[in-house]
Image (cartoon, helix red, strand yellow):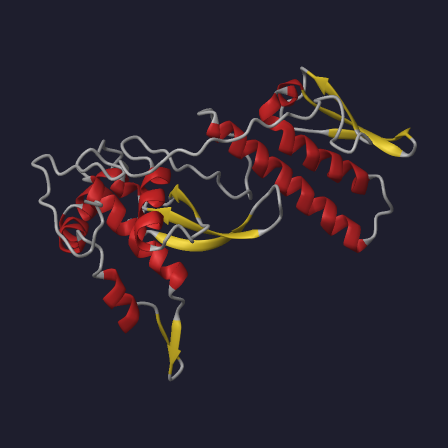
Length: 274
């Protein structure tokens, strides 16, 4: 039986945990040839590397038929920084142009996207991102106790036919609210839906059905937008509530959310383990 079959109910195991992901099949991903670390994908911008640099990049114009040369920190020669290098090349091409208002805005945006990409690469590797104010925090789906990527995949496949293209992360906020927002992909520049889940759910005392419940709730916010009636915003309307109750462990999730989550949030604010 499918775990999330809404027509049947399974008993919850004594430890409160469930196998949500037995039906997820891994797809064979074709091998992708990585671009050269010495030049951009179009072959026009050359890269050089310095072991002395860490949080800065530089460019020198007119090196190759008017195209720039980019100096990067030595660690960015690694294959996983390929997307970041492409953004650096695009940044350098604009940085050497005439300083118009439009071009300044493009340069600023590319710099921000470049360092966001670098921070995300460090985070994906399990390392600490570079400290910088003003940048959006990296996406962190893997927590101490739960991996949100797996939970989202199960919810998306079961309740939304795999049609949702959102991403998910553990929230950086200390408060207990989970939420959904729009963020720009630093590599492609396209907007995407981002679900942020309260870290109060990433706890040893949180069963997997509770995490899946809050993920399903936030997915519904993407599918069912806010309604406006008589000038009043309705976030959880009638359709939303009806569909929310289709979650197979709705009652168990709501009970945990009301009784246990507040205690976890208080513990987090006092820097206690949960």
